[in-house]
Length: 330
Image: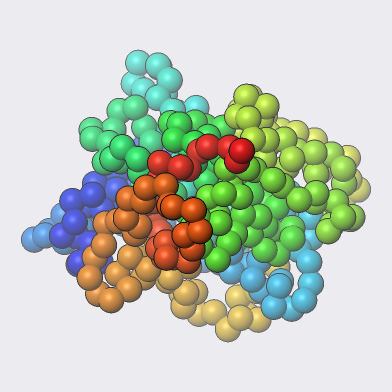
C-alpha cells in the first residue's frame, strides 16, 4: 500500500478485504491473490503476475488509431468479465450457503487482458460481502467509479449483483463506442445522467454489431434491476450463444492475444502501463500528497440559480450523495 494510505483505516480495511476475497474466489477470470503481509506498519499483497494490458488502455489504443474495436473481441471480453463476476456472485460458504460478493468497481481499468488472450477481473477492495467483518461505508456514501454506478446505487439503494451487470454493460458500451456512456464536466452532471439512465442507441454508432449483442447490452443497462439478466452467468451464456452463430475464422483468444500484443507495442508499454492514475484513484485522492477520505463535501439542495461548477470535480472511489440525488426531475 501507498504509505500515506496505510495510515488511513478505511483504506487499510479495503486493502485487507481485497486480499481476503481474492484468496477465496476461484476462477480463471479472477486474478489470484497468493499472499498477504503486514510488516512494521506496511501492507503488501502478493498477486498473480499478469502480462498484458488493462481494457481502458486497449480501448484508448483503438481510439488513438482512429479505429473501432472488433465487436467479437468485445463480446469475448464480456464473457470473461461475466464469468469472473459469476464466481463472486455465486460464492458459497463452508456450509454451502450462498455468500455472494458484489464487486462494486467494475470498470475498464479493473479488467486486464493478458498476452494469452485471457480476461482477468481485478480489485475486489470495494467488494460487498455479507461476511465482511466491518462495513466501512458511511450513510450517504457510495463506493465505486462514478461513471459506472448503477441507477439504484445513485438512488441510495444497496448494491446488488445486478448492479455489477449494469457496470459491465456500461463498460461494453464504452468499448464499442470509444467513450464513456455516462460522463460530464462535474460529478453533478454524471449523477444526473446516471439517475435518469438515458442510454443512447448503440446501433447507429456501431451498425456492424449484431442486433442480439446490442439487445444484451441494452438489457444489462436497464434502469430497473429486475429487468436485467437473472445472473451474470446467464448474460455470459447469451453472449456466447450470439458468438456461436457467427462464422469465425480464427479462435478469439488468439485474435485477442495478438491485439493485446499490438496495443502494448503500439503504445510503447514495458512491464508497466505507465498510467497509474487510470488503474487506481490513489493519484486523485493524494493529488497534493495529503490523503483525503472524502472527495466531495455534503451538499444540501442548492438555491435556485446556483452554479454546479462550485461542486467538487475530483473523481474517486467514495462519493457523498447530496439530498437531492435520486429524485426524478419534475
